[in-house]
Amino acid sequence: MLEVTDLHLAFRGVRALAGVSLRIEANETVGIIGPNGSGKSTLFNAVSGIYRPDRGRIRFGGAEITGHDPRAIAALGLARTYQNKRLFGSLTVLENVLVPALRRQSGCWIGDMAGLPGARAGRVAARRLALECLGLVGLTDLAGATAASLAYGQQNRLELARALALEPKLLLLDEPAAGLNPAERQAIQGLIGAIRARGIAVALVEHDMRVVMRLCARIVVLDHGEVITTGTPEEIAVHPAVIAAYFGAPADA
Image 1 (cartoon, rainbow, N blue to C red):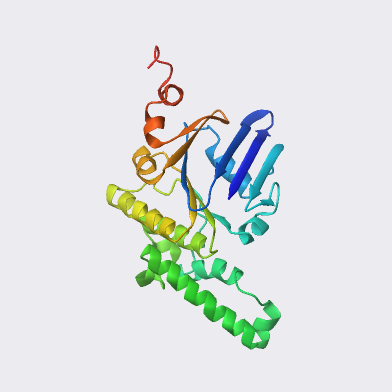
Image 2 (cartoon, helix red, strand yellow):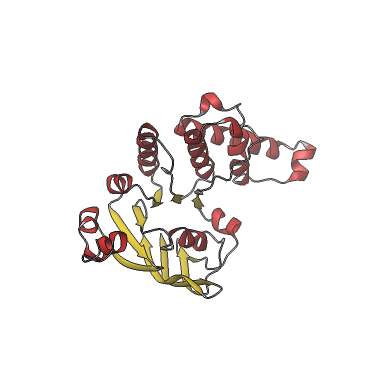
């Protein structure tokens, strides 16, 4: 589904990605881990079109998307969440999800102004999709509340609902469990499991290794912008290069 080949990206000479290559298959849940500054979020930004790589190729569903506009990439079925929430704080919870849900509907602003049947049908379908996504993340009862009034864990779930409203084939999750208490982390794990059960592939950047180990069948480890190893959770947990990346060389640990 996603194929990244020899991806390079530097900022003013500082190397952020140095030849990253990886694959994500349909219906797969892959963890992407590494120390702070290893290039995880930069990789997500390049794949989703926010950054244009200096070199390398990104293919999604067989289509070349390297350097494409984020809107075009999202339209192909690749959605993402952000570590720093991008919610519309003054809009309601439902309205936040309607924004991406409406993008999936046909029609134009002229049809909306004229009240054409196709435009009305599109709005009805978008509302139905938005409510379905809110139901999946457990926020239906808060549909009329403003996004800014939500607790942090609820905002995490709203961010997920907005991404799901794009009806993605692949969902990039950037630290969905960051800042959550144990009960909220457990709830997020259940949500990710429910997303996976709907046939959506997931790439997960997360520092909580318990979450990664429980959810992911395969883990890619980055360090200094490079993939240092790929393997199962059991293999990653004892891999010398991974231990050294997180804790230092054996003599220093």
